[in-house]
Amino acid sequence: MDTTEILDSARLGILVVLLVGASILDLRTRKVDNRYWMSMAILGLVLLVAQVLLEEKPFEYLLVVIPISAILFDVYFEPSTDSPLAKIAPAIEYGAAFASILILAYLWGDTEYFQHLLGVPVMMMVIVLFYILDIVRGGADAKALISISIVFPFYPALGPFPLLRAEDAFTEVFFPFSFIVLVTAAIIVALLPIGFALKNLAAKEFEWPYALLGYKMDLPSASGKHIWLMERMQDGQHIVYTRPRRDEDLGKELQKLRDTGRSRIWVTPKIPFIPAILAGSLITALVGNLLLLIFAL
Image 1 (cartoon, one colour):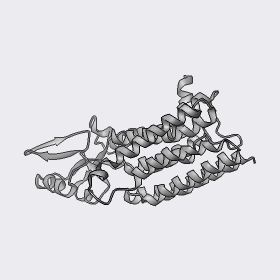
Image 2: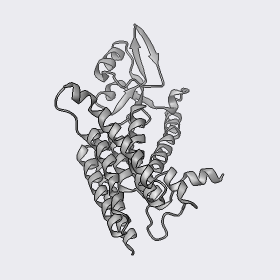
Image 3: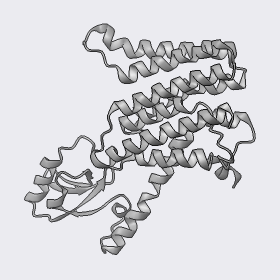
Image 4: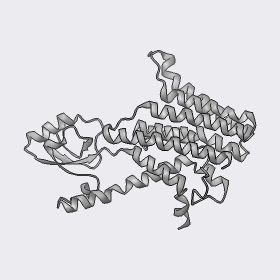
């Protein structure tokens, strides 16, 4: 085993251990403590620094830690006051991150090795943007992907794995490891409508398009579950919809439906995305970039 393979093995080990623990919490409570992601990010930074030093790359490459730290500071540390400075702190932090990325790209952006390192803060900012745009919905999901970006600045090389390898470095830089993890996890979740459809067909409760997005549940059983409603009483009328409201008061809405005499209602589960990220990480590490298969078709 060479140095790179040892580091990649350590990275994958850290990733699996922390994501397995986080997945268990996500399945049980739909909440994951920040300590999982902070630990992953810190260990990832340690391994990143170790790789640059052990491979005897220019010491200046470690300046990439500046934009990484600026983004992490905004993600994990909220101002304790409501002062004007606290309100503009995120703009300052991301402005500093963006400016430093541009400067570092100007200095060493033409070097393939540094392109991978610089891809870390770039991907972190992309994930933050995805979260703002509601493409990545859960805060824990976004933090997990941010940490994965730090842990794997390069695609892992573990003996014969991954099975699919890009033919050029540009593809790996343009489609970094954490992005492919997100795409793979999204594909896994996108298969859920098939399961919903089969469940509803078996229960003889198939109604288009709701049967692809959730299932029916006895109303008394819905209280306390990790679900969103797909129907509600609004202005005295009963409505069924496909896009659940995230701000609903579940108990209050259930009572309104109960008052109308309804016994079974359409619901959609709050999908725990961390297990999908775990599966996506393993698939990407062992199989490789699934987009290569798609582009090959």
